[in-house]
Length: 309
Image 1 (tube, rainbow, N blue to C red):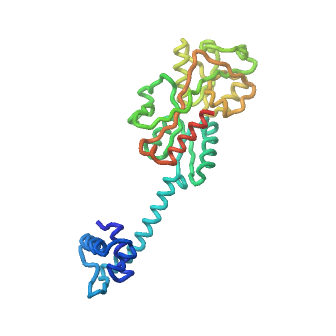
Image 2: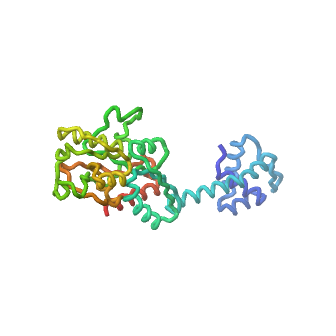
Image 3: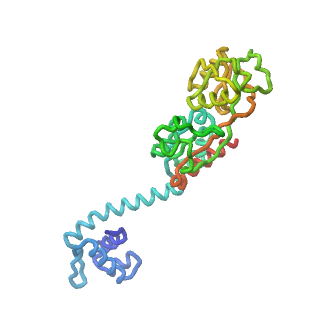
């Protein structure tokens, strides 16, 4: 194997014309230069220098190696500088995937603070709901996944599909807890329960429902069945403003995470506290090796700070 340090010595010998002059240029001893040249010729499997008295001439193989050495050493220097910049957060890239309500609430403040502190770090953002976002992380399509799961709920077999491990089994990932996001009830502003301090989910048993994303719909059905009824879901939409608009028009009731309420302007609706409380755990996920990358670690830190505000 040809080593970069040997190439540097060869280039110095070719430039100066002697081992002693190359040693002075490199700041080492003449025997050290001689030893490294012997090691390089052994690796190359052919003579690289012709020694005639005090003069050194390159063989054809030596000329070829010196010609390539210039580009190789320049590339290594550029690589070292780039790696140093990434390690020092003067450069770097992070691919972030987030669910929509996280994108509109936690992500903007976190990324603005990250850019202000480390302007050379670039972050790209795409949206995906879990479990797809977690799959993207494991498949190498992102570096950080903002995800959630409902407290006390483990994925049913039909939720898992072919994914191994299951999307909600995060034991192989680095999990950065961010916040517990409580579900709140959403009713039309003229609804009989609009001014209630708190309601039980069972009080909505006879109401038409507007349901959210597939995972949230499953959670809604679970909670309602636990209260002794099956919700009548008249409308289902992944769009939180649409949920608010449908409730505001008097077409039904809904439960939404508090984080989702922050991301829309609720008009014509009232929020009510639902008892017993139902929460979803908001986390930032990454792979163990990625957690050691400075730009990824900084992104996790800023997401945690944004969640704490």
